[in-house]
Structure formats: structure tokens, C-alpha cells
Length: 133
Image (cartoon, rainbow, N blue to C red; front, side, top):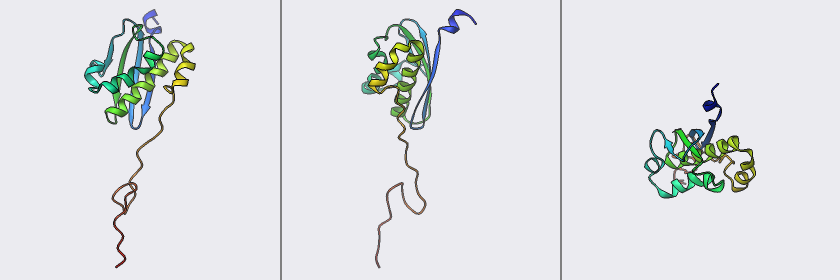
């Protein structure tokens, strides 16, 4: 193994049905999500701020280059998965970040999933209109 490959930290984040594989390497703060810029991929500024939250909390925005591959789910689920994977990769890079990230909720996997549709109904909770006669 070369020195460069030892310094790359990989982690996986999940949210709903989205999965993000994150690679963190020492660098200048370049972000690539599916080979695109983070601002280009997540068109909403709120989602970009949400994804960057672990980096802002640990003040390591300019210390690492981030390369991520996200798939599945929608754009909000992918943002949540990327945030989770990024926090996990930061803990691998520096274990002193663990308490800060855990207290802010970045390391907690959001386990809420879509409820399945039941047979004989139009949706997960919705029922057909009841008719007495």
C-alpha cells in the first residue's frame, strides 16, 4: 500500500432508499458528487447547507477533498445519505470529531422509511370510502 491510499477514508451513509459511498482524502476542499460539483448536483441551497453540516461543525471544510457516489431515492434522501456518510468518514479520519458529530445528530442513521401499500387499499393508510348500503 502506498501512503496516498492509506490517507483515503471511505464510509457509507444511508437515508430512506438512498445510499452514498463517500471517499475523504486530504486536500483543498474540492467536492464531487457523481462527478459533478455539490452546488450543481443539489440545486437547492438548503440541501447544500444540510450536506455541508458535518464539515462546518468540525471546521474541516478546506482540509479534505470529498468524492461521493450516491444512488437510489430522491434528491432529499440522497442529501441525507451523503451527510451521514460524510460524518462517518470524518470520524474515521479523526476520532476526536465523534462526540461533536454525535451530539449534533450527524452520526444517527435516520431510519424512517416509506410505509408499504396494503392490499385492498389505495395506499399505505388511505381506505376506500365506506358505504353502508
